Amino acid sequence: MNTVVERWRAWSPAARVISALVGIVLAGNIGAGMLDKVLGGGPSGPSSSSYATSSGGLAAYADLLASQGTAVTRLRKPLDQVHLDPTSTLVLSESSPSPAEAATLEDFVRSGGRLVVTGFEAAFAANLADARVRWSHDGATLLHATGSAPEVAGVRTVDAVGDGSWEFAGEPLLWASGLTIAFAADVDRGRVVAIADASVLANRYLDQADNAAFAFAAAGAPSRPVVFAEYGHGYGRSTGVGALPSHWKGALALAALAAIIAMWARGKRLGPADRDDTVRPPPRVAYVEAVAATLARTGNRDEGVRPVRDEARARLLARAGLPPDASDDEVRRVATATGVPAATAQALLQPAATDDDVVAVGRALASLEEERW
Image 1 (cartoon, rainbow, N blue to C red):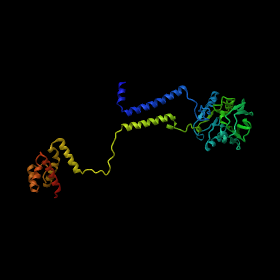
Image 2 (cartoon, helix red, strand yellow):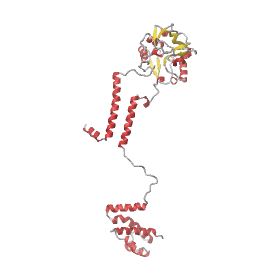
Image 3 (cartoon, one colour):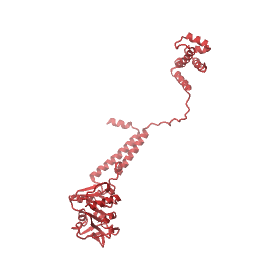
Image 4 (cartoon, rainbow, N blue to C red):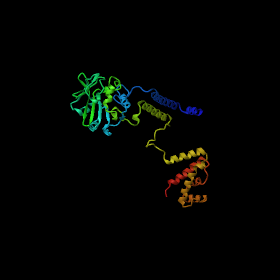
């Protein structure tokens, strides 16, 4: 425990504040998730989705079918990208299919599939039975069952929000004041059940009047699997980070910002890069400064000037054609024979004891470099 406290105290104040902030955010999200699982979340979800528990959702409809032994699945892909089993029932509520999906649905129905559609978007399916059918805003709240179709067996009245009806439809299943709210029609080997008012199947009304009986019968025999199309409600469209809940996205963004601030606070400050046109001292000046630094650091003049003396001596011996290990007497003789001043020759043979000796060695090398042969 003491080690943890010591490490915590060793951090900078900025790092401690950032760490505490990130910890609070993560703890809050984890705690909210646990409470949601324990206590259960409130009604939520998009309207007409079988996942949605809101008043306009179809979660209760899916649960009703499952409780009666019907196999219920959710389809989270575009309809034209999957195989629709013609022995099943597809529920498509308030969802506008693309042209490719509409063509797939027509093939599904004509091959024997059962299609239950709701809302004004259902007009494309209603047209499979009769091209004259049109959706209208006129609606009713108390609907009456009529006819002898299996979809209304045991059904007397159905409640609805009063949003929509069909014009020019055939024999109705549900009607009110001359308005056709739902009808069914055979299309080749399949069947379409078109409901103009989507609230008939919604959670809010499913336990009212005979709504549950009508909804169950509209799906067909219990042995037929029922598939709810969910791609049009937004499910299956997001992957990766996009599929995370919004509060988790916010937490990740805050954590990323905290990490950036921490790196900025802990990072080393560097000066600007050298410009390409920076003026640098010539090599000879740099060398002189290096020798001066050596002399200042060691205090040994002869040690600092030795490389200069060796270079000057080598040049003098090379001029005379003597070997590098020539004696001092030979150096003096060559210097006299070649016209090198005696002071220059003497500077190359004696240790540098004073500043004047150091200067003399430098002058000797300079004079030998300037002469041409």
